[in-house]
Length: 178
Image (cartoon, helix red, strand yellow):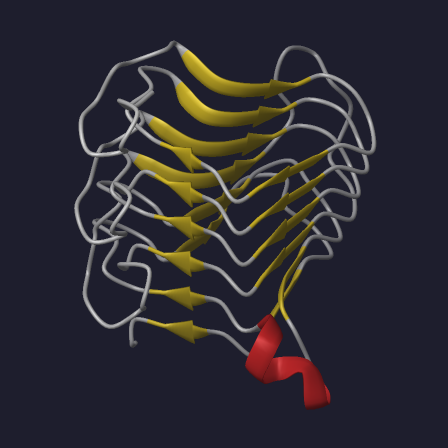
């Protein structure tokens, strides 16, 4: 969704569509797409160390409409910057998929720049969980420093547990602070 140097939008509809299992999407700039940056439909995938919404610097928005949508289970969203989009991350059943179960969201900057020290707003929510269960956002114990998400600067909710969200855990994050 960007030019070759990651500074200008050259839109796709969806940046990356993941319909298979056990894939890794890592170290990309996925910005400027008209529907969603990454759409994860299946299970056991890893999305890590991407800039989803910002330009190459991590400080300027090249917005996707949506950052990441997840309708599969046991996917890991790790150490990304998901900012500058209309919404950040949505974990919910889409396209008649079953209930998303056991997804992990750890170590991300959501609604901030890539350093976590300034807002780069997702216009609506940072994270939405709807009709999904046993999602873990953040971490516990000695892993908190690396598992913590910085969820700040979003236009509406940092995290929204919407209808049908059950047995989810939110712990060890910085929400509303950097």
